[in-house]
Image 1: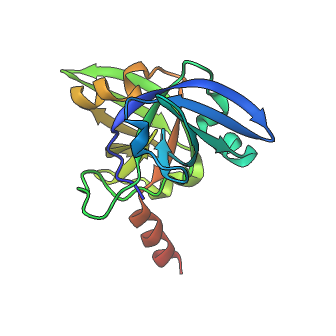
Image 2 (image 1 turned 135 degrees about the horizontal axis):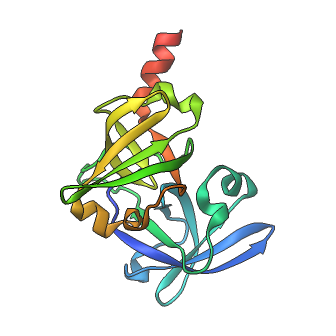
Length: 194
């Protein structure tokens, strides 16, 4: 379980296909604090640490994960939002995030607004019913508040701090992002449909 508060931006060092895809990610976090088997959200995707090195950790991604998330497009040099899993007593600064991506969205517009940036994203049609104005959504692992919704298209405002400490600083029209809808929205929709 995560909160969508990014702790650092890592960088893909190496990718190897071994049945599954092994991805090595450079990080600033002391690797002695990263346990084998630990969960780390990598741009919103909950992955299991399988190996560590001097300044990196490795994760394995299955074909299904590669096909349903942006991980399939990562290359050496790709920047990755990182958040370790919650521990008992950690602050819940964002919202409850599972790290189970619901789909990929496409950035349709990035517009500076004062010191912030307004980012508009087109989500898959089937996710539109779960996205609500002033509700929460996770974009590439980042807990954000939805500002407006038009069908499956929604806008978020990115404050300067979030812009500078996440991969959103390189967001551009046409870019794809991992989306996870708010777990509360999922349960409310389920209750209403029964």
